[in-house]
Amino acid sequence: MTPPAQGPHRPVTQADVAREVGVSRTLVSFAFRGAPGVSGETKQAILDAARRLGYRPNAVAADLASKRRSAVGLYLLDLRNEVYADILSGVRLAIPQNRNRLILSVSHSTGIVDHVAMDSLIEARVGIVIAATLLNPDHEVRELAGTVPIVCVARRVEGVDSVYSDDRAGARAATEHLLGLGHTRIAHIAGPLYEGHQGRRQSYEETMRSAGLVPQVVAAEDYSQEAAERAAASLLEGPDRPTAVFTHNDQFALGVREAAYARGLTIPDDLSLVGYDNSRIARIHGIDLTSVDLHAVELGRAAGTAALDRLLNPDAPVVDRSSMPHLVIRGSTAPPAPNN
Image 1 (tube, rainbow, N blue to C red):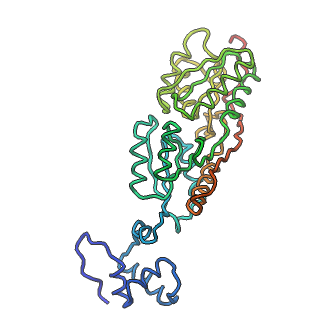
Image 2: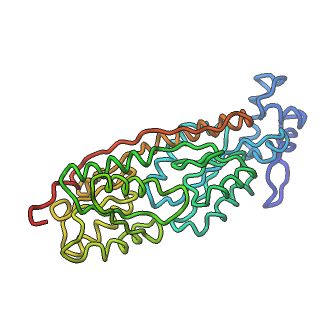
Image 3: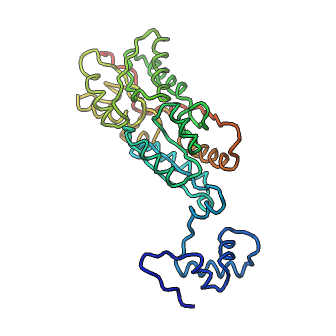
């Protein structure tokens, strides 16, 4: 048969496929949905015709017709931070692409476009959002979850499905490692004061006080490497500068590293450095960063599984799944130099 005449912008429809094969529009719909009542031979003829005509199923229309939403939205705070790429990899492992569309929306490390990134997923009519990581206060996250179900990743929000690593345990392990090496002047470059993201800072402070030491915290203005470099600038000046720094994430550690080298300090001879996330950059030769591994790929996989379970069982109990991070010791930490 001859393909139907079309304007330059008119998409091929199921009706066009039906005319090409000589079957009903309903039968074409059944074939694409895998519904019973379509013989194998007819289904293959329909698929072949669809491919020949360039037909692409309209997933949104299919969801509307079935009165369900199968698409999964994935919100990522900042793709410049490789931990989010690892989370994305884990989500992809859990979500079968032939069954559920995965729609990605990326915010910014400052958090200033959080609402835009989330709104774009809601407007795409996703059935659920995997959020890694929202900077909104807990009550706003719960309000959002009333609009579209949410699975929080790397953060716990009471009353909302949450898959996260124990930040307090991870920060304690990092700080105790530096204490065990003999450091007493240990500083922490923290993230901005957002609710739900203070566990690492609080655990560092508690561990320092338990050792009889005074915590020294400098908060970066946002979650970028550049913000951490600016935060570390004044911290590393003067004779009483810290001999070790524990940072909120690996991006921050890179910022501290740049600030240290700009002041003639070497790592770990003059300054020990511990990051958090154990992202790919921590493992690069020459950086060799001691870092807390929160197992980001596994967090993503667990979040993807939780999202699919929630789509299938909307009334199931709230998921609250914590995992234990562990410290990976590399070459960026050492005992303090004798003159320090």
